[in-house]
Image (cartoon, rainbow over all chains, first blue to last red; front, side, top):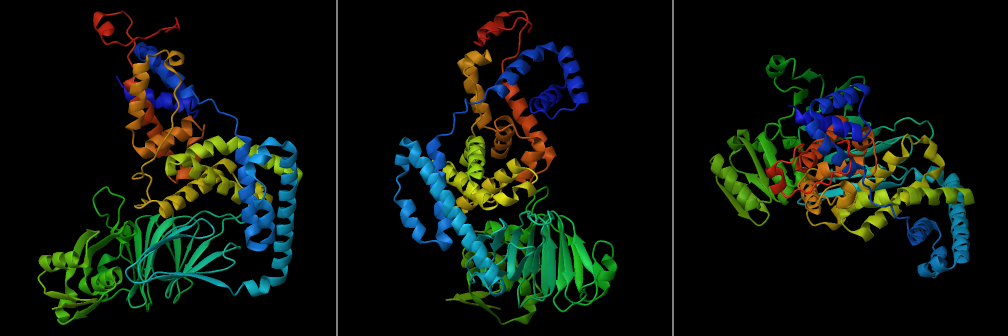
Length: 374
Length: 190
């Protein structure tokens, strides 16, 4: 007997998501297996038992109003704070009259703030456009930030993100140097009701998105710019050929050579891609770290894991340099052709070098922040 | 302005308990949860002139709340995890007292244990659907997962709890009695 089906149908019914057919099927199954009826009935009772929703304490809202007022007052009206802070919260609960007085005062303050902000912004609209915010990380450190629109950004080592002061206008645009993982929040234009695109400018490509999660790697010294999409979809425009737009699907990765010219899709034209010595652009499927895992090599740094998926020494070294804030001196050029695969979590530079040199024989020496390999 | 404030107050009261519980699941501190709910409503106040543009206010509020909770976690927890799957969540699924449910206190305990053992994301989804009465689509939008995932997770939670319940025994067999499952069968039609 398919008991599981019964519970699925019951869950659909209880959450109000069942279709008419599903309800019919559920009733039929229950008649067929009356022994499940008891448990189904108890389940229904459990589902409908709700905590007695206590009326919200009036003090909560008062406290909230105070925070609101402080918050609104902070940017423009500093003098307002003194007055607001002096009104004890407990007092307000006891005397309703004070409460309304407080509400009125708060409302008036808000109105004033809004008026001032509004009249201010009218005047200084032109000037405001110049102001920029910059967030940057040094080698050896990473950072997670939230942009004003709710978009989450993980910034890898030695990277820089800038955005305009008026970020939350009709477009959301940021400039990226280095590597970052974006989890873009949906934003809707308040005027037109349309989704506001989020645009990332790098030295060689622009990436336009609506709401999605993906990784961008665009370090100045590197030969390529990489875009790896986790979910949603993004549209990539190459600076060199702005008329060509590439749409990425989840689990796809786009690698663009930084001085580019033509487009090659790795999925369909693999042979041709190999034939050309260095493709300008390559679209490929991302390799999951383990089968069936949602974890990709491209985004493991977000979880503080240093990961290489069959990457050349040439590419591995700068990554280690940024990760541990060290510099490499390569004495044997042939080493640069070697390839590595591996994941390191919370390992010291010593341990990483030990593991790498063990898997593919080479020598290394760490002296302060300089690593020599041969 | 005054009318705005009244509506605002009503909205606050309407959502406070649910949002507070939702935030508590993440931050596990009543004070912090209250502050986050307050922040959510500050944000709401700031955009109150444009509320008509928001498709689903409930989803919107939960989404901001979730973002603020995750921010809070990255700021205050030592080892923040970014995915719901790995996050340790404190959920509150309410159960009536045994008598209302026609089962023994033992079984209520068993049910609570069963719920505790569900994966965090599963519990959170179950909480949102059962306690907050949210539609699958809404939960999916807030947590940015697929509707199918929500459907599956709710089904899993329901099945696990149902399986922990005593089976109905038509003829009182001796084994059934020895199981110490005191089933008060108040409804004669069962």
